[in-house]
Every structure is written in structure tokens, then in C-alpha cells.
Image 1 (tube, rainbow, N blue to C red):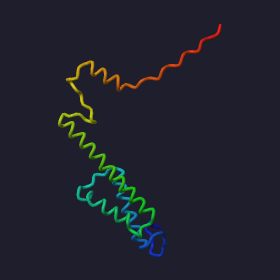
Image 2: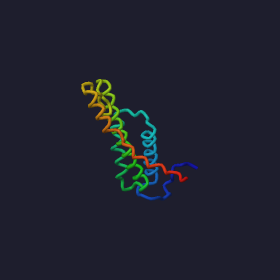
Image 3: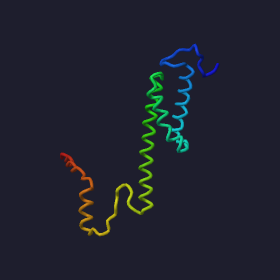
Image 4: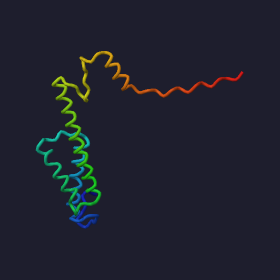
Length: 135
């Protein structure tokens, strides 16, 4: 028995069962690539959102496949944002500037540094008084 459906099989969504099966397989491969960090050529990576959006907006696709395609688009967007943040961090390191918005200031006098440290330090709540033993 094969995984590929025959023309007589039914299912949710329109289109022929073979088209839906091929679309589902295509979506599975795209998910594997996105979730497992496969190296994708830039030309193919640029075309991925259009292809995934076509599945997400296809009225003949099953609701399950449209939801999976939408989740995949969100994952790709998240990967793009993380890559931009990492690139910014690398560029800052190469320039010798501070990463994560932390800068060490050399010209501030010691008293001012201590005042800043005291203002940023979390203040501990006062300890309750110890109960006294009765004699």
C-alpha cells in the first residue's frame, strides 16, 4: 500500500486528492527545512514565503494544511528577526562598540558609579524580627 491517495479517495478541501497529497508533502519538506535549519540557497529562500502563502490562502487546501502553512510563515519570520539581531550583534563586535546596549564609561567618577550601582541594586525586604523565647 502506498502513501499516495488514489483518485477515488475523498477528504476535506477541494481539488484532486493527488494535488492535496503533493501539496502536503511539499509543506512537510518546507517545515523540515525551516525547523531543522537546513542551508537553503538565497534564491529559494526568497521564494519560500510566496509558496507557503499560496498554500495558506488556497481554498482547496485542508484547514490543517492552511494552519500548518501559517505557522511555518510565523516561524520563518521569527528566524529572520533572530538573524537580524545576531547580525547586528556581530557588526557591533566587529566595530568594537558595545553589544546588548551595555557601555562601559571611563570618565564617570567613582562616587557617581557607586550611586548608579546603589540605584540599580535590588533592595532586600526588611527581615522580620526573630520571635523571643519565653523563659
